[in-house]
Image (cartoon, rainbow, N blue to C red; front, side):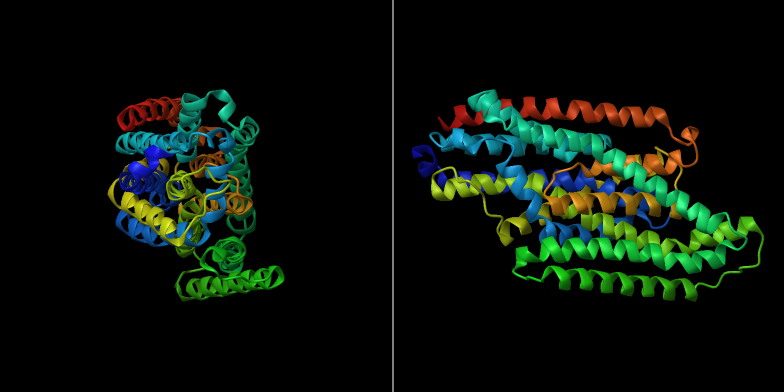
Length: 420
């Protein structure tokens, strides 16, 4: 307590600085999850992807990011063990933020799509063990989180596979693919509009003091989905395409019709990524700020609008500087993407991610996105996947947790020694 009181200003600066650095890494590394498929399919350019992602990532992080943040800061470690020594919690969370930021910076510069959730969870566990031993970690919660890491890519892959097969059956494998695309395209647009608006209404708006009842929220989400579907139909009808050309040209025309869908699904995935991943930076930051302010370890750390703003700003800064590097890895190297395939991958990833955000489950958006892209590739056969690239990505997932833990423990000891 005495250390916190004496160094309060410096600790505040470090909390916001390390939190901003960590969320910078989230934006730099995680933007591939939302925009890699859009760029890889040729639907939009890298510059367009960065601008669109910046807007949607900020909105998702600020409006719908608070639910997951609570899990990261409160449930991974047993805060009661830190009550006699609150300064150790401060040093630990600062160490976790800096460690995660360093690893994400290295990975982003190398173009590695690592999981930001893995990084911060590993760092938090590392500092907790370094500070108080293995009993400081809530291993039951860790077990649930680890299980979600394996379930997430499977769910993303399954949803993407089903969507790909449905488009193939309902549109491509018909006598008139262009006409069927005009017919079914708005239905796929409705799915995206409904999913994203539902999570915003039910979970996100409460953090800016806007409360809508459950039934009213459901009805509003459906209404927004209908509006999105109507907009998609209008855009498709305005595109002049020949529905009586040969099948090769018709298939190319269908891909052209799905470009507007691809732009919207990319934006939806950016929103989903922002809502889920911002927690990895602002959760530990909120725990530090709350402990500094009160001088004691609290049962929960409030996620204020300003903290959400800082985290959102950091993510936008990261994606505009180094986001393109990881984007190239996910968008081009796993499998060949077209607008329809990329649409299926991003809708699947967005669906799983926003559902996890609403449940307060800190899944890895990277895992979901990679699983979804793999699901799209598997729909064309295992040979459509570059297994060497997939294997390399999986290896990077496995080393991220121990690297985060080791860096976190090291930085914790350095901070402890410096302030002592």
